[in-house]
Image 1 (cartoon, helix red, strand yellow):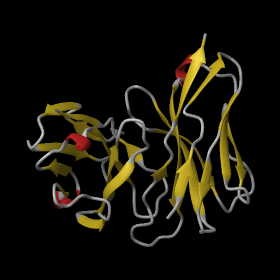
Image 2 (cartoon, chains in turn green, red):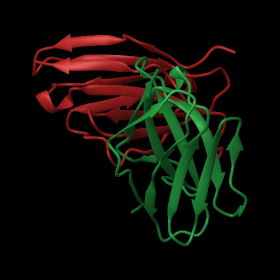
Image 3 (cartoon, helix red, strand yellow):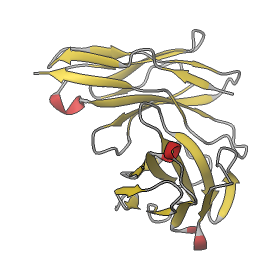
Image 4 (tube, chains in turn purple, orange):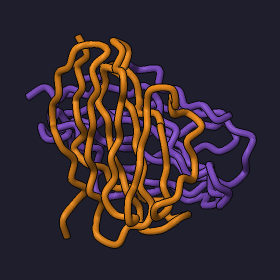
Length: 118
Length: 114
C-alpha cells in the first residue's frame, strides 16, 4: 500500500517571502500522480498543482512550483511571494496511474498548516 | 459551472442515532467519491462509485455505513448507528470519468457525535 508523509505539522512565513513544504511517499509503482491540495477554513479542497511521475520536468503554476525527486520519493511544494490568501492546510496526495478498479483513490498525508505573517 | 454540492454543512447528533449526508456532483461527472477526514488527518476514501455502481468500498465500515448513488447522479451516505469516532468531516468529490486524475471536492459536512 502507498503511504504519504508530511513531517511538518505547521509552517509560517512572512508575507512576500518564499516557503517550502515537504512531502515524502512510499510506493512500489513506477507510474503515478502526485498532488498538492489546499484546504482553507471553508474546508473545500482545492487542487494547487499536480505532477506526473513519468515527467522529469517539475510542474509550475504561477507562484507554486514543485521539486520532484523520483528516486528519493520526495515531492516538495515551493510557494513564492507568499500572500495572505495562501494561509491554509496543505495536503500532499498520491494516486496510482493504473486504471484498475480501486486504484483511483487519493492517498493523503496528514497536512501542513501554513500561516502567513503580515 | 456549478461545483460539487453537499448538505448539510454541519450536523450534531448523539451516539447511536442515524444521520445521512447528500452530495450532488458536477454535472456529467461519472465518478463520485466519499472521503472521511478526521481532525488532524488527511481524507481517507470510504467509497467510490462509477455511475451508479460501486468501484471500491474496501474501507467502508459496512456494519454501520451505507451509500447509494441512484440514477448515477446524486449520492447519499448514511451512518446507522453513529459512534463517537465517526466525528469527522465527510467530503464528496467527483471526476469526469474513470482514470481522470482530477477530483473536484465539495465543501464537506462536519459531523459531531456526542
